[in-house]
Amino acid sequence: MSTIETIANVVSIVGTCCGLFSRIPQVYQTYTTKSANDLSTKTLMINITANSCFLFYTIVHEQYPIMFNCLSVITLESSLIYMKKKYDKIKKSSSETSLVDMDQIT
Image (cartoon, rainbow, N blue to C red):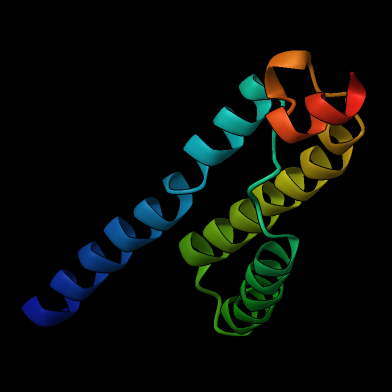
């Protein structure tokens, strides 16, 4: 294996790890704050679609480390959509209610 191929493999692994770990802080924050109001469902769906297409490519070309990344990203993005739907149903506390809404309540 040539030096450039070795470097490309290392860079690919680093990029795969960065891509995977970049989603974890958002999932953690959404889970701990129980708020997903600012997340775009459309963006999440586009990311899932893109990673599903890339997953198919990696399966055909037997690129297992990148395949793992695609599966992980699809799982994490799907969990964000699930939490967005779940936490949307939670009633806001008075501290999260806007002043305009509070004026209408009283």
